[in-house]
Picture 1: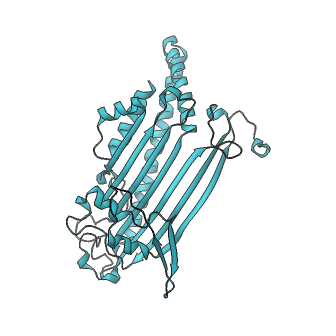
Picture 2: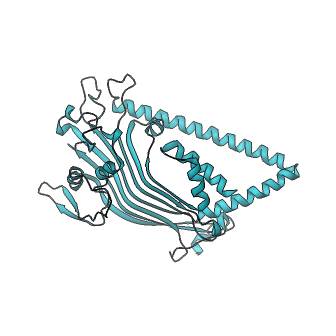
Amino acid sequence: MFEGKLTSVLNKLLGEYVHGISAKDLSVAVFKGDVVLKNLRLKTEALNALDLPFVVRSGLVGKLSLQIPWRALGKQPVVATIERLYVVAGFADDVDGDAALTVEERTERWEKAKAALRRREIDEGETRWLESALADEATRDDPAKNEDAKGDGWLAGMLDTVLGNLEVSISKIHVRLEGDLVETGSGKRATASCADDPSSSSKDERFAAGATLESLVINTVDASGAPAFTVGGLAERMRKSAKLTGLAVYFDVGASSLAPEEGGWETVSPDAFVAAMEPGVVVSNVSKFRDDDGTSSFVASVHVPHGAPVHDPAATAQANRRQYLLEPVSAAAYYERRGKREPAGSLDAG
C-alpha cells in the first residue's frame, strides 16, 4: 500500500517538472527500495508556468536518488540525495515578443502571480478541509469505512515516522541569470538576454548573477547531536541538524554567457552543461587571493574523477574572478521541536 502511494506521488511530482520519467521503471525502482535517476532535464515550460519575471532556458538534475529500507521502514531512515542541480535563466520577453519588460513591469507581474498562487493554495486548502470533514462524518456511521480509516491512520503514522527521520543530502547547486543592462529611451530592455546573441551587447553591458551551493545535509539527531532515529512521530520531540557548505551569491558585470557557441542553452548536452556550470561551485578546496583592484579571486585546485565532465576553461576563468555579493560561507544549524504530548516550555528542561 505504501509503495503504491509513494510511486503515485513521485510520478506526479517528477513527471510534472522533468523529462524522461518512465512510470513503469519508477514503480519497479520504488518497490526495490533503490530509486536512482540520472541526467534529468528540467521541463522549462513547467517552471515558466509559474509566471516568474524570468524564463528558464535550460536545467539539469545530474542525479536524484531515494533509498527506502522497506524491510526496516520504521527503524531506518529514508535517504534522499540530489546531485548537480543546475539552472540557467534569462529575462522574460514582453508578450509582444519584440521588447523585454521593464523592471517595474516584471515586478508587478511577479507580485500578481504570487498573489494568484496564494489564493489558489488557500482555496485548495479549504476544499481539502471540507472533504476531510465530510469523510470523517460519513465514517462515524459506517463500520466498513471505519476499518478503512484505521488503516489510513496506520499509514499516516508510518508516513509521519518516515518524514520525521528523512535524511536529505544536496550537493552542487548553481542557479544563474544571464542578461544585459541596456535600456532604450522607452525604458525597455534592448534585448531579452545576451545568451541569445552575445554580439548584440558590449562587454560592459552584459552581466551574470547567480547563487551557488556546495552542499547541504539534513538529518535527525539526538540531544547530543549524534545521528538518531525517532519512532514517536509528532508525539515525540524532534531534533534536526543541518550543515551548509559553500553558499555564495555573485553579480558579475561584463560577464559573457557560458552558453555553447552552437545551439545555445536550449540544445546543450548534459556533459557540456555540467562543464559550464560546475566551476566555482565547490569551494572547500579553494584558495582566496586579493587582487590589486580590491576584488577577490578564488582559485580552486580541482581533481576531476575519471569519466567526469571536464570543466570548460572559459567558465573556470570566469568563476575564478567572480564578484561576490556574498562570499562563500558555511554554517551549521540545530532545530528542536516539542512533541505534541509535551507541555509548553518543556524545551528549556531538555
